Structure formats: structure tokens, C-alpha cells
Length: 341
Image 1 (cartoon, rainbow, N blue to C red):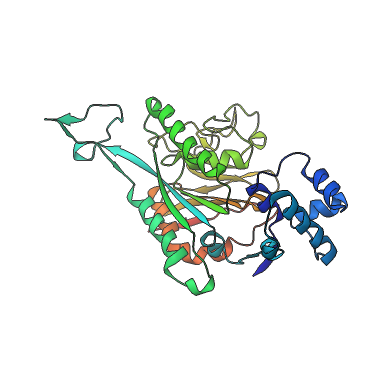
Image 2 (cartoon, rainbow, N blue to C red):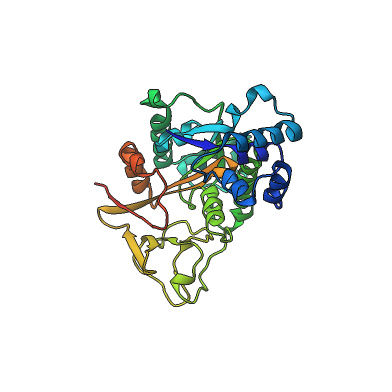
């Protein structure tokens, strides 16, 4: 376990954040700005009792926190296991993409009239591979080894968003995915969001990845002069028969004059060269990406197989892989190809 200061999270929950926060806290507490910044960013090796008392005074006077709750409220325990990092949140959302199928399992337009004698044939389904990944995630979080962490989320929600099904569905896909993501972001509590499935089935994955690398969601970067100029350092090279949603991290071209023929997941290595985790034969690739916004108490995760086979492989090996996800790696990119029979 690791002890961390929750000052930034407490201030955010009381709408006391944003520009000028360090200057304001320094003026009110009498602490030096660099010390305030270190406290907010949880980068202090030790905290003096005098500094702690000044921070507590500020919270009591400015936000009416009960003195009896302080300073204990300021300290939190960060689990060292990735699964515990997710399971210990107050709020957890798991997002899955759904496809609309008509009679006989054929794709059906969400706008179409798939009726006969007043009966709807169109139904929405989560793909089998994403369902398997969902089940493996729940088992990893709550089905085994619960004694390693003491708490579970106070609220656990499953969100369903429509999968891309041609350009006519794009606006609906974007609107519903953005609604789910915006609602999650606006929550003022310790929270985590897991988006299961690639952009081909789950548009929330597109938004999380775009936000992480300051890219524009649903906007291809095909016009980059060289691959190194792409904002997002991962790239799903779709197959010709794949769904082809517009994506900041997917498509058929890495750059204006660079169109790799090998399908799979590409990533930018430390030397700037792009490396391919191929999806062919008995090889496939999957991506696990997470962004830990410590100051906001927000954890966002994407678990995306390049194909259904890759998602099933990720699901079956998830219990072995989670030990490699935490603590976060800094300044390094990793990507693994998974073999499946």
C-alpha cells in the first residue's frame, strides 16, 4: 500500500480548483508556493504538523469541513495492485459497444423499420468477445482475491453505446459516446471508467485515447507528413473488410505517404520508429491503455483487442497480465502481441 494526500481531490469535490489555486492556497495558508504545489501533486516526502494544521484550517474555514474529520480525511491509501486501483473507486463504470442485428442475425439500421405485423426484429447485442472480456474483468475485480482490498465501489454501472455501422450512424455514435464520457467526467468523486472494445465496437475508447494524447476524436490523422508527427502513438491498421470508423488512432494510413499493408496494432517506439504487432495467422494483438488522473481521482482504461480473437485472448490471460499494469511506466511505450490458436 502507498499513502497519498487527497488535498487536490477534496478541493475539486468542493469546486475549489482551476487557475490560481496554488497562489490562493499559498496566500491563505502562509505556505510557500512550491510546498503548496507539492502537496497538491502528492509529491512530498514528508509533511510537517505545522503545514498540515494550516491546510486543515483552510479546509475548515473555507469549506466547512468538520475538524473531527481532519486530518484523517486528507490521507488515502493507494493500492499497489492494478485490480485494486480499479475496484477501490467509489464509482466504477464499464462501457460496452452494442451492434444492432435484424432477423436472422443480419445487421440492421438503427433508423430502419425492421418490423413485421407490428413486431420489432432489430435487437442490440454485445459481441461475444467483448462479453467475454467484460466477464473476465468482473472476475478479476470482484471474483477472486477480494481479501487483498477492503472496499468495493459504492456504485457500479454498465453503459452501452452503439457501435459504428457506416457513415449514416456516425452522428448517433458520437453523440451517445460523448454523452456517456461527459457524464463520467463531470462526477465529483473518486471514479474509474473501463471501456471494453476497440473503436470498431466502442466509441468511448476513441474518446479516451484522443483525450489522453490531445488528439481530436473521430478525426483521422492521415495527412501527417510522417508517422512521427501523429499525436497518438498507437495505431490500429484496419483490415479491408473491417468496420472503418473515422478515428484518431485507426485507419489504413499512418501518414500521407505511409500506408502499411500489414494489419494489426502499431506503436511508436522510444527511438521514434513505429513497430507493428501483427494480426495474421496465429498472431493477434490487443491494447490496454489507462490514464490515471491522480489529482482528480479519475482513472480511465481502454481494453481493446484488434479482433474478436484478440479480445478473447486478452480475456483469457487477463489474470496473468494485470500484475504488469501497475505501477505506471513513465517515458516508455509497450505493446505485446498475443498468440491464439
